[in-house]
Length: 388
Image (cartoon, rainbow, N blue to C red; front, top):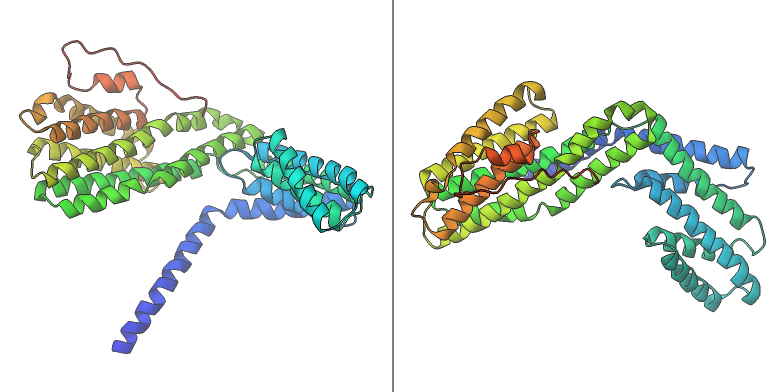
C-alpha cells in the first residue's frame, strides 16, 4: 500500500507535465502548421526558384520570423535581411583584404556587431551581421556567391513566413483573450483572498495573495504581446480584415485589464498593512471586494470562452451590477476608519471603473457611476489607447 502511494506521488508530477504540454500544444497547433509549411516552402523556393545548392538559411529565417511574438514579425524580417547584408558586405571586403584566421574572425565579428548596432536598434541585426561575417570568414570564401545567396535566402525566408501568416492565419483574438482571461482570473483570486483575510484578520493569507499579485507582470507583458500579434496578423491577412474592429476593441481594454491588476496589488498591500496594524475595514468594504471578485471571475470566464452565456447576454448584467456597486461605494463606507481602510476603498472604486471599461463602457461613463467623493468633481476624460 505504501509502495503504491510512493509510485503515485512519483507519477503525478510527470502526468501533470504531460498534461501541461498537451495544453500548450493545443494552444499552438496553428504555429506548428505555419512553421512546417513555411519551412518547406522557403527551402523549395531557395532550391528550385533561385537555384541555391543549400538554401539552409531560408527555413531558418522563416522560423525566426514566425516564432517572433509581440507583433514584430514584419520588423524581424527586415532585421534579418539588413543584418545579413551588413555581414556579407563586411566579410567580402574585410576578409578579402586581411585573410581568414583567429584574430581576423574576432575583429570581423566585432565590426559586424558595431555596424549592426549603428544601423538599427534591433539585436537581431547585430547578431545576423556577426553570423554572416563568420560564415564568410570560415566556410564561404570572399567573392563567392555563397554570401549573396544567404542574403537572398534571408529575404525569401522572411517573405515566405509573412505570406504563410496571411494564408494560414491564427485567430487574432484567441491568444489575446486567453491572456486577458488569465490576468482577470488571478485578480479575482487575489481579491477573494484579500476579502476573506480582512474578515478573519489573517495576515499570512493576505501576504500570500500579495505575492501572487506581484508575480503577474510577465503575464501582463504576454497579454500585450498577444494583442499586438493579433493586430499584425490582421494587417497581413486579407482573410481577417473584417475583424479589425474586434481586435481594436480588444486592444482598447488592455490598459483597464492592466489597471485592474495594479489596483488589486495596491489594495492587497494596503490590506496587509491594515491587518498588521490590527485595524479594520467596514463590513461593507469587504462585501464590495467580494462582489468585485465575482465580476472579475465572470469576465475571466467570458474571455476564456468557458462561460455558458454569451458576451452580449452577460455583459449588460455585469455592467448593471458594477454600477450598483459604484453607487454604494461612497466615502461614507470607510467613514471613521484609518487611512489604510480609505486607501482600500479608493482602490475598490478604481477597480469598478476598470472593470466597467473592460465591459465596454467609456471611462467617462464608468467614472460617473461612482458615488461622488468631492463636492465639485472634475469631468472624466475619454482615454482610448488606439496606438498599441
